[in-house]
Length: 402
Ligand code: SF4
Image 1: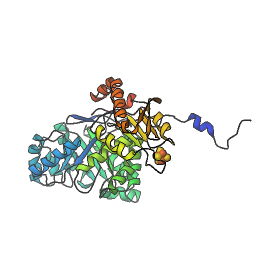
Image 2: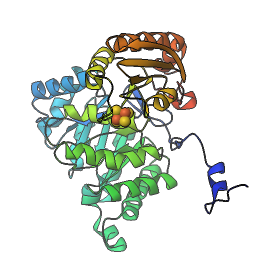
Image 3: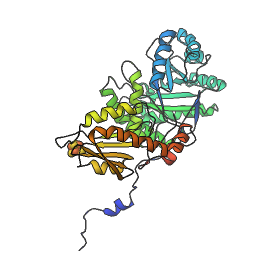
Image 4: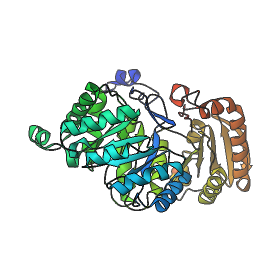
């Protein structure tokens, strides 16, 4: 006799089997040699902490950021001597330079006399709409893009009064208002951010915005504070945004040295599968059932895979409880038992090896997986095949250029 469930199982039958929402459709906006929006990668950016007029110190910090993988960099320009340093800085770095302006529209106009690649302003603290228009006109004349950075902490008083407090709809109305002013000047090279230090406010603001407008977004949780909590808080806020398909460039705001922001941003993009650039290692936490020295194996594997731009999923589990199941779902997997490892490729057992040979065997499988997928990996690296269109591997990890 068929068992009748009290649950609505037909809902499950109709549910999508492959999870993941498509990217929010946004326009493309060029920033130096990068294109933000559309199907382009979610670019990782950061901001310097030096005095911008200190050219040596600023360039040195940007170079450290570049080495870490930073793809766009922002410097603050509060004084004329900071604007004066922009040309010298731009000449010595390899990534697009963004000038960050608050309060003083004259500083924005001054900064735009220099070879920057983008300007970021917060119209909420820049004064009258006429001042905003002057900056827009100059950016338009120079052919430069602008980030309109709405921040819950500096929202126009009028909108706070209308909505009661700096809530998501108030922030989005602020952004839309400035978008319309810019559009009335014939200007469209905009990137929008809606930042808040409150995760719930930021998430809902970006979700609301994405229903209404199609300029690309810069995403971040502002003033996240000190690591490690700040990284967790940023991940908590940015993951729902990214999983909804929103976000075209990302910045993690950490107190202190900005260099760790880059690894944190790439980790969040990797975990949300918005930008998979390195092998995804699945390892269990271990427990009393552990049948191999898993920590040693993972440490060695991480070391040997370091720097490899391969979107391959590798599962290494410590015993036969979940080992075979996880291994079957990965591109390459291992299930350990009695000091031996069963190696899986594409869901099938391909061989059994001694514990001491597990890492070598996994690396051999990685090499042959790379060879099999060489065409697709090369196409993704050249930017001809944006990953989300097709994906790679058993569970279609998105592969992304860069
Ligand atoms: S896979 Fe095995 S060893 Fe690892 S946590 Fe699960 S039961 Fe424990």
